[in-house]
Length: 77
Image (cartoon, rainbow, N blue to C red; front, side, top):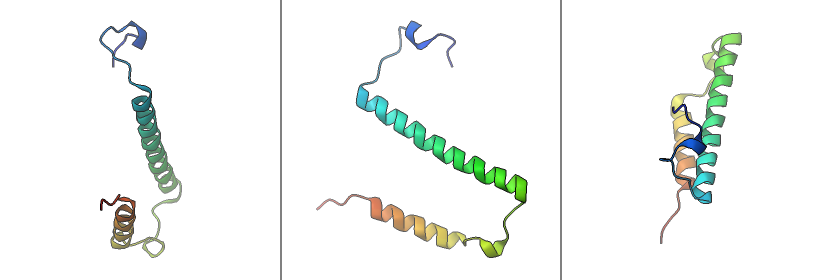
């Protein structure tokens, strides 16, 4: 990363407001995913791995995720 503050760099271009909002939304979503992962890892560190009986088979999780993705896709007539 540059040592210069953003206001001093002549090569930088400002984003339009919609693009800036999209970048902020993406950053927030990535931060939320990272926070979730960190929480899971902290739980494993504190309590150990969960027992297999309390987990969800990966096939079930995969199928549910794929179904969610299929429901989110926009359809074009």
